[in-house]
Image (tube, rainbow, N blue to C red; front, top):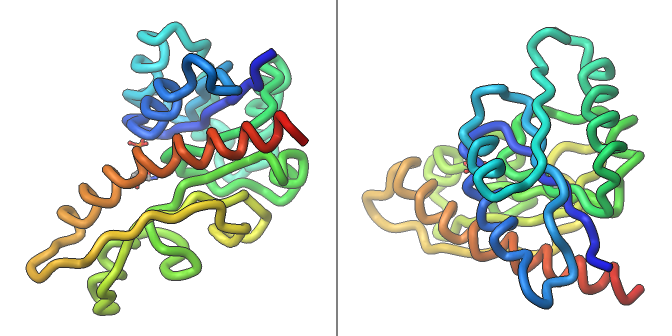
Length: 193
Ligand code: GRF
């Protein structure tokens, strides 16, 4: 019986696509849900084109009521009953209450070499810091933002003339390689433990 993976997105969903497309053959997991907080996220249609069940929980009507938004997210997840959550370009900060329910089986990909550059605008910050290296990290999600145990990283050299945009493009290509590899190892470990 395959493990079930729910993927949370907010935008184009390129990481969701590579994760979903990696879960084939003898991969121990399969995608069971793609959930977006953004009704206009391009990733929703990409998931539907792959026959993956989708759900949209628009965060905007909840305003600052994060718990209210998350209770709707949790209801959608309860219906899908995933074993693993993958945050993939998901741009909402989750409350400790939500994280506690999933801690240990919720992964996120962050576009920096954690613990450097937690938070937003990581590519511009790497350039401003004069970093020689940059990259991305897959980590377990804990209540502290971008702070959980790192499961895998991919590194790129920062080149003279790089801009936040050129860095973002090279990092995203690495994300698309790293996240599926880390998810497969994580799922295999979960299956055998
Ligand atoms: C990208 O900037 C990526 O670095 C980060 O989320 C953003 C959107 O990714 N993880 P996606 O194309 O929606 O997966």
